[in-house]
Length: 168
Image 1 (cartoon, rainbow, N blue to C red):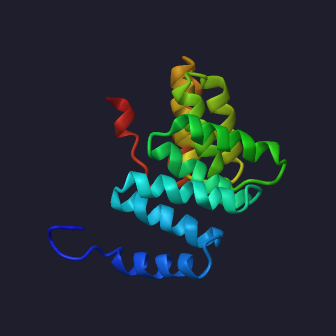
Image 2: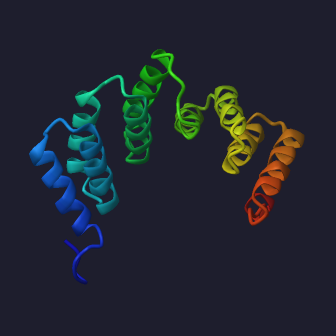
């Protein structure tokens, strides 16, 4: 509960909780509820509902990718990485943003070559952030020219992108 009044998420919580009451194994409702708890800072409820969402259908590519991402952002990197690996093992086409989850896991493990590979996979989808991620990996690999090329590509895809952060 917020001290300054009701949370904008209150309505979402009501709808999602009602949906889960009606169908306790509704994967999208459980995933939505997990996200709402994550957004509200309730880590325990987020984790509980994320696990339930994955358990409801452990082969749903979209849910696995989404929960892997949010688990990582919640600080549960080992579990995020395990879900990311499971997702890849299914052999299904994954959402482009899943590559960012893999990037984050590899980057945290200081495996910058694998991180660059994940960023290049996202780059194929022309997402403006992919070259920025790739630039980070190239910096860590000591490949300054490639890093600058990646940042120039980020700027071309998203003209409002600022390279001032890397000029330090």
